[in-house]
Length: 484
Image (cartoon, rainbow, N blue to C red; front, side, top):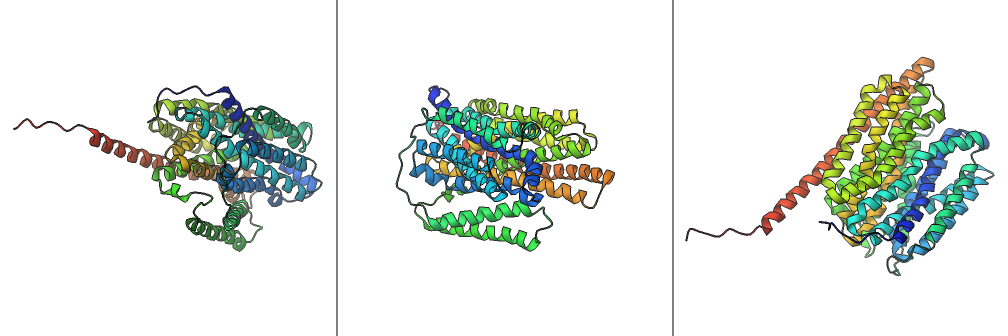
């Protein structure tokens, strides 16, 4: 049980969280802004859609690999060293991409940015866990999530403005300004938060992680592309599964594995990880569906589509620290189910009204839906980490952060595949109708996933109540015998 009163969080910690959070913000902002800029990039380098999307996927892949290695980096290098490295990599990657003379150089820049993002994300959450009193984790994790999740809210608007007023290269150049601001904030406030140790990085584990994540990323990126051989697509999924098995087997043989797999023995952690993954998939997927719906069905411009979802996305980011305070004060049992139930009802509302959604109705439903997402996301991570031993939390953060990256890819792939299936071979009004039906079917799939998330949380808190009941019975004083 967390104590009610704890010392206030120092200003230096707030600034350190802000500095690392700004790096995460730049990563997500550029990531989502490039969705708008993809047609321009395709034209600039004469590449097709399936090739151009690697501007997005390559970043996610690099982030996922570095995040998986973050427990090693946190033990081997000081926090300050990692922060300076992340800033340097971001600036290098942004300028490489901004000045890229060809598509390959652009991808190199994006992967350098991904390496920086992979350092920044766990750095922010580990700073919170190591320096903030446990009773204030919820609100501080919410603040970190607020900063990072502003990216998906402002990214589409930022991207559309850059494409319309300047050109896509300025997405990278202007983002470098924020990285410099983050450096100036963090260089004086980020200090070592734990002693470094001379741990060994197992080469086979790194190779297996890279193969596992690269194969899974390729599968997610290509599963909706009919031009790629199904044998190659599903072979990559099989290779990813084989590499995962190899990584698990290798980790069991090591005294100090990169990720402590013992965390998966904690049932409440596993179930909250599932609920977290589903909430992240749902957040990305609904934004993708609505962007297509507004442009194709409602025949609006990309800028209008961005502004339709902007209020809800911004509101979700602002809700995160407030709901974190609720978590600190009320406990996970009273907060987490509220978030999952609300966004599940939001999905149901999209299903019911899917045949006649105008821009205003979409914006209103999305606003309420994103309230549920805002209450769920960071709090699931906080609560899941809270169920682990202190020495396991770095591994827990790495797993959550990796799950977030793949949830983003899955959140695009699932609705894209469903909608494309209903659009196939159709033109004109039939194409519009197919988009509408495909969107509704995608919402139904997401609704089913959301029910799984609700069941997972029900099992978490059912077991928690049983443990509390057993503990109270064990501590309850025995009654005296009055019959003698």
